[in-house]
Length: 159
Image 1 (cartoon, rainbow, N blue to C red):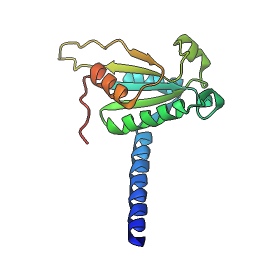
Image 2 (image 1 turned 180 degrees about the vertical axis):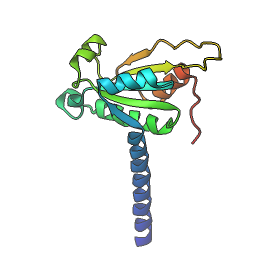
Image 3 (image 1 turned 90 degrees about the vertical axis):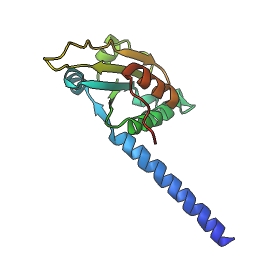
Image 4 (image 1 turned 135 degrees about the horizontal axis):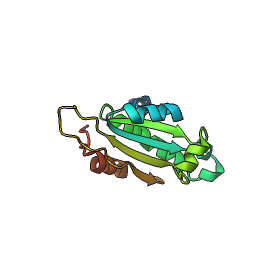
């Protein structure tokens, strides 16, 4: 009986360690940016970019009594870990620059902006940048993956 309990707790510890390391990997693939850094990355980065605009005051407060903002943060970190090296993930605190939030009509948090930049080889035919896609509100992990697949034409990585 003791050995079964010990195995159970070892299994729980392994699962928790795996979950926490995946969480840390996702957070490591997300850069928290201010207005200047956001502009610099968007203007100079070729490829797929996802920006999460969020309000930290909504996480873990009465405004978010269901915990949806905290869950969205976890989903964003999971997706960032899954697409590491294929998509640049940025996180922007809208309280840092209320003028940007107002100009961008960021009235719902979180808001996700999907940007695809092409900086073609000068010898190649020009490939136009895609118009950024904005999604207001919460996304499940499968919805996030579907949007990344459709907008960026990136297949879901195999585990």
